[in-house]
Length: 423
Image (cartoon, rainbow, N blue to C red; front, top):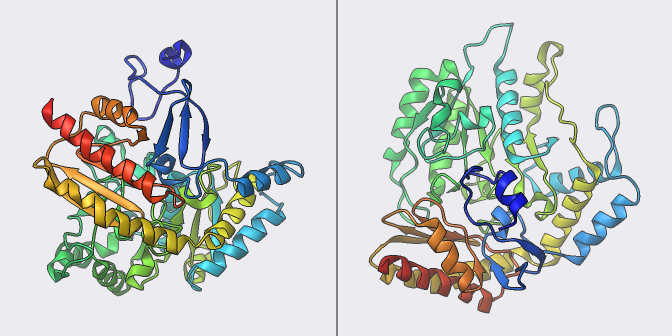
């Protein structure tokens, strides 16, 4: 490990004083990461779910270079530019028609903060509003900033240390009905009860549609969202969908809300928005919400320095083009079918609780937590990069991943679980 890295760089969710071993990557191409000692690793994580087209993509590289020759950044206050206009036009084309107003920010967590501020300002009327809390489901994850932390699961959301410092929001049990199973209407009982009793205090419900990500990689029934939409309408509570992880085809639909045929009042997107090239996110809402925010001459009080960054807008616009040029739907379906046919062999292992697949997402849930250091060592030994957490080993590979590469990821998972069992 490099001494500068070891002694001075603080890695995510890690100790800076007693750091774990890190692997130095010198380059990346396609689905492969190349380490400093020239070992190639198939990336099963898409660099935390963002690099959907693979690394070092020629068209994305060209887009960055062309935009850099014009301008890399310009403030968005009082100014605009073609990359932002072009990206907005493309997003409006692929989103539901009711989602019309787009606020650009520089990370997924910030886009959640903006969504929460939108909801609070929408509900703020005549200088008085009791609707100043949020309702969410357990096992959810929405980011690491202060507002976003307050709507993450208080236990599995990794932020229990800050519980006394966060906005005190409402939580109900996570959806239990599985995506490909029968929907149990009792899944919504707690949500109904809390909304009935507390709706005058609730500005919005926030939830990850269909797939709960870092809170547990759970995949739930689309009917839950249909029922939730009806409840929010009944009680004048806004509905926020956090699609930072699921947007741009990851679940087999371009956006996960399409599985349920319902549309949120506010949508957050990020991660794959730029194909993993740059940090960028967006919060998108309806004219109804925009009018509510601007009632009595108010405006949305938010404005990041790098909002609408031209480089990010240009590469995001090009990434959307690539999605359709490269038949994202066919590729995601191909990956899904392969995972369903082959990853399920992990069910043979006694320590495995469940295997689940949707789109280009494969999850192996174990009964016990994974030894991260040992698992990482075994994965690297087998030429793959997979980053487990808690009791979950999962992959979200780039959409260009071929069958032989998928098989190598699957074999590595199967063999590593066996090794961990033998320890």
